[in-house]
Length: 231
Image (tube, rainbow, N blue to C red; front, side):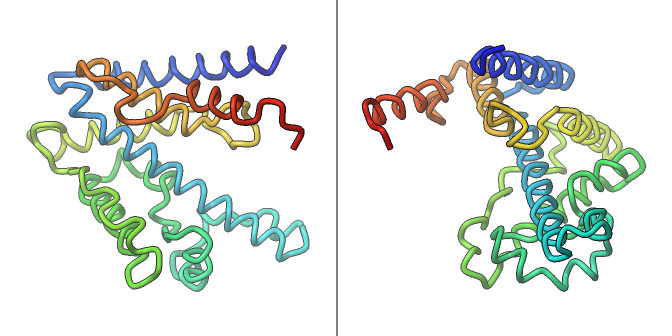
């Protein structure tokens, strides 16, 4: 199978799962109004997995590839232990997320968390505040300002209803087969984000290109810029 065909198959499978997720969540609220929850939680998953992968890799390398640290999992250690390495993680990633507040751990408890809306609000605020008084503060300040986990009009009139919908979003985002960047021929997180923006923009009578440069355009520009060059 050619790389182009594999890329299109991966992209088609990803788009189908995203469409099914968005369709399942579709209700009285328009997709355009609802997009910030899907996109925000998708990004939350990305930064959680990115930090976890980074810490696990560092621990593995520090052990010289030994078996003990090869089993190390940042998601499973205590918040207290993780905070000891907070400065190093901040310097490398520009933000810090405690193990208990990682996407995967919040997902595990979502169905039984009667205050899920409060939990998510607190976590998103903690992520933003993690860079306070550092050179990275301006990069993430206000990152999640447009996400209101207590919005009655978009999520539901009662706390139970809001949490039920938030759990659906978390589980839906968790089910997306995003994998590791190196294992795919497409940028799965970027592609998922772009597809969602395009889908919601079209449903709202807008144009996706108003918000980002489509991948095909970017790829064409790169090919034109590199045409005839050997290095």
